[in-house]
Length: 347
Image (cartoon, rainbow, N blue to C red; front, side, top):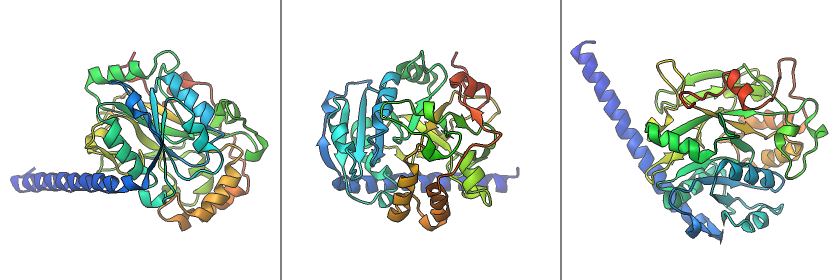
């Protein structure tokens, strides 16, 4: 590369770093302003001890999922949950307020206009997450990783600390039943994967986003069925859900990308493997039909909601997501053998 081209490349790199630094500051300021939209319902954050692992989530009407969601992540090693309730009407708020390891805030404000809850959580992470390993998940997501059944989160985060690594990536894996969604009932406290026993193992597209250096992963049953005519419109499946938090950090797009962008490098650009996990996505339980009809009317879940009208219509039609290429879920070792997550050098 000639000196002129080298100078231009360096200038472009510095310019991008400058723009992203200011973007991060704007996101932090935006979240600081949005703090006034939150009303404390049960603030137990004084119980948070140094080294505690924290989980952050925004949710609405998730009472059915909550018993297993909380139990699963408690068993992994989450010490405290910081949750924003977005105006639930099904008992979610009362259930969470009664949990001794949950701090709860309520807001009736727009989920979409808060960057899909990210602004609210960023404020809570700024205030309570600094210096802690923080897991950011939705109520329909369950984190697993290699050896999660025998090595709790403190073992994983201690290892990441020793490696000098501050973030941990995961693929969001859509789970679904065989047959119509409404034909498979689910009861509170049950393992959702006993109902949603299937997933797509091999139809994923991966791109590296140069601007934020995150992985943009698309595929699974949503790309296959709902966005088959334009798979690039399908939701992205890559996330960075586990981060050793600093009050200067900010998620950009849910947990799909974060600033500073070095935290998005949860992959080996040289072709090797980094340790990674899976977010088992339990969206497709039987109540999805009613939820989809409600969300289509509320128009709170996508920036351009009109693009997703057909998606919601097909979900309210009670589809069968199973196909001859569907794979039955058999646990984390099977997922790892399929190459969907990796232990990397964590043995």
